[in-house]
Image 1 (cartoon, rainbow, N blue to C red):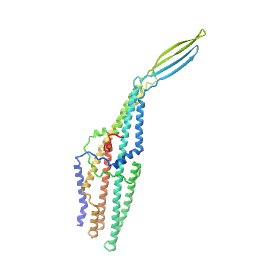
Image 2 (image 1 turned 135 degrees about the horizontal axis):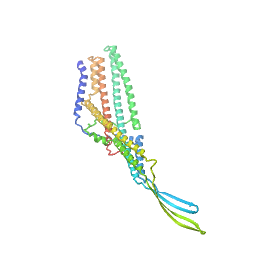
Image 3 (image 1 turned 90 degrees about the vertical axis):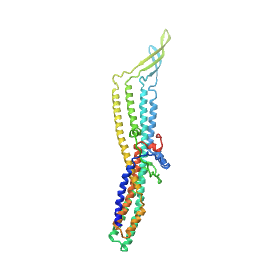
Image 4 (image 1 turned 30 degrees about the vertical axis):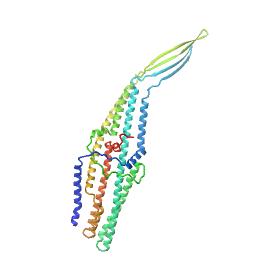
Length: 427
């Protein structure tokens, strides 16, 4: 029977590995992720978005860009009023009104630039929201994983304390050697040290969660334990809808519009003026007055500065924007595919654990303890079996945490975070 128990961990390991590969094959048939957040999780997400300074800053940037669009759409030139009075041999007084004409529609080009910048700011705002929600889910995943491992560590501590107490009783009764008792004490000390480290990890996870949410809450919402599979997806379609890619596309459009504006600025705008007044002449002891009107036309001569350098600079800005778009597209494609693969692998590993039946720790520990107390298992073998049982459960908890994190990464890298929240557009 003891030999059979020694083979059991190896058989369990082989079975788990087999289930892992089988799970990967089964998951070749995918279904789309449709897992709306629970009301308490949605409330936490909304509260985090409202209170986060980075999101408020991004919203203010959108409002500022909208104001710049309104300003760019205003007339480029205001009329000019001119009053003049001269006194020499004659006296004259005139009133003039002049107006520069936007001959090549620079106003329209300015509006195009501002509109493209507004689109970029809106996309950046949407990307910031999705990224923050992804960070929140990852922080929740790390916290819940650390909390579950901490609870398991406390259970391990209780088991090691019971084991030490039983070992001392058996040693006093002469059923256990001093060497085995020392081994039990060493295992107990190791468990104390592990619990200290795990408690520290839980504190770090809590602080990271507080840093993301901006609040200290003892009742954090749970994450779903059963995350649906990932279906086959159109990579190009997801990338073209990604907020970050849309932001860089908008910046390319802004660079195009800026170059057009610089070209139009090389065209001089004429100024037309109308002047009316009177001229007084003192003649024969009498003042005689004459009406006077005039029309003026002035055109700047761009001779000393043709503003070609500004056009060249705008062209280079456009080349830079296009290169950045290509670079970010390739990087986003890599992130999308890698996050999808991590998600699938993590889900396959988690399913493998679920299919083992998640044997009860209590029943396993009770069985091992009975065999050890009956003398059919040495203290060393008992500790190895017990540690493997507990470490397998801890590994399973870590796999679940990686699944949650991979799920959050997928939602962000695919731009599906707002779809998951049930939002058509960022608010």
